[in-house]
Length: 137
Image 1: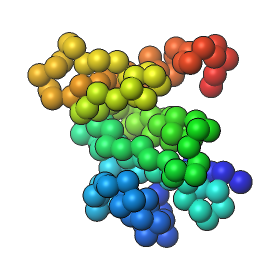
Image 2 (image 1 turned 90 degrees about the vertical axis):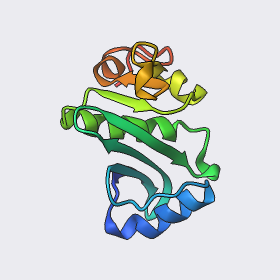
Image 3 (image 1 turned 30 degrees about the vertical axis):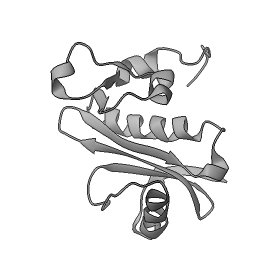
Image 4 (image 1 turned 135 degrees about the horizontal axis):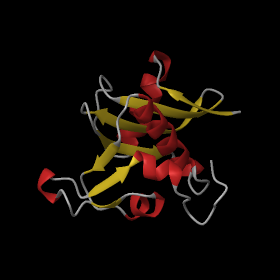
């Protein structure tokens, strides 16, 4: 059974291994971190830093053997639901990324001075259909 949840203490070693395998350093001490698991095997992980009134997406990683099944979008959705519950309305990402543009981020033209290339309005994300599916939850 595949589950998505906030990272627990028991997940730290496996999450660190996935991060290292993907060239990412993170001490896992702050932020909103969700893990996608199949039983006890971690399939992917994502993190958003809470900056108060906005969030910054740090990473979404899906283990290579689980890619191609939209698990990255599942992790993103979990992170965004949590952000919305914390009254965070926008999430930024520092670099241009084609995948994030595909799932709903847009170019951050209006506020380009804040050093973030992409922005996502969480309410727009959940209120507008994505990827051609009008019945999407």
